[in-house]
Length: 69
Image (spheres, helix red, strand yellow):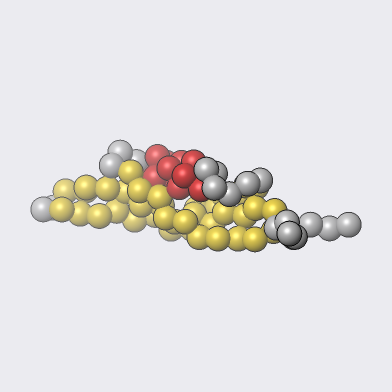
């Protein structure tokens, strides 16, 4: 029998890198979501303060197995 997965979009942030921003999104989500499967980075951007990069942001689509209750 096949499986069904739900996909959600997360936005992670970091003051150091896009990689850390994506990692922060996944690690935070894993605290409340179970059985995370795949993460796809869909967009990278950064915030700028007074002409300098102040933080990095990564939008991540994450799939996890959908379990019937």
